Image 1 (cartoon, rainbow, N blue to C red):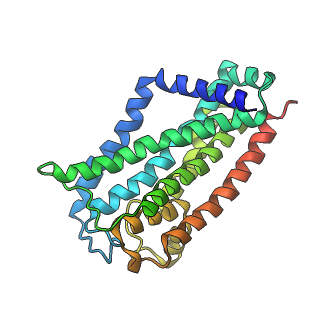
Image 2 (cartoon, rainbow, N blue to C red):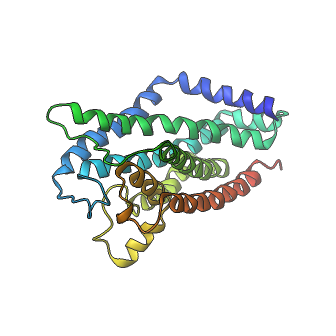
Length: 268
């Protein structure tokens, strides 16, 4: 099992480094969002009470962008499976001695870990912008401890694992790119826009504010914002409670993904 898993992980790595345009675009898109939208909308009046402890809108937005990147990067996981089907690669993998679990776990592990790179690159760039004349940067006003930093990394990793698993399962289950991208956009966009990644939830209708509170992206970002802004008084729970809620989402959706992928990989 481990030998086959490492072999498939190596394949994922080679495919990743041999497509530099994919690497460039995966890094460029969130940076453009950060510079254009974050700087452009920073004129919004954003008191710490309104922006959940963030000193300005850009700081609020840039942390939300980390969750945005972790979610959107996972969209490409299932697309690669669709292309592997079209090229006959997946059929050869299924016919090989490699366990079905390794075929599913190798892209899940690799893509989830790779999503951390652009996610935290965005966070680092947001901090550096504070030192560039004419730009507003991310201001970390909290005292980030080692435990807090670990919570931040784990929250982003769990969010990435959750949606990579879900979209990978969609890729195994569907047969053409049109169906895949239609389905994942139907899932991706409502999840993103009902989270607190882009705008504060205080002025939302009551029912939508409730949806936002339980959104897995919101739970991940709450863990980050509480640790980075030291703003526990603006939240109902501690970062550990939000992380536990995110883990519940992860367990449920990953189990669902495993069931879907197992049915799709079952030999007729």
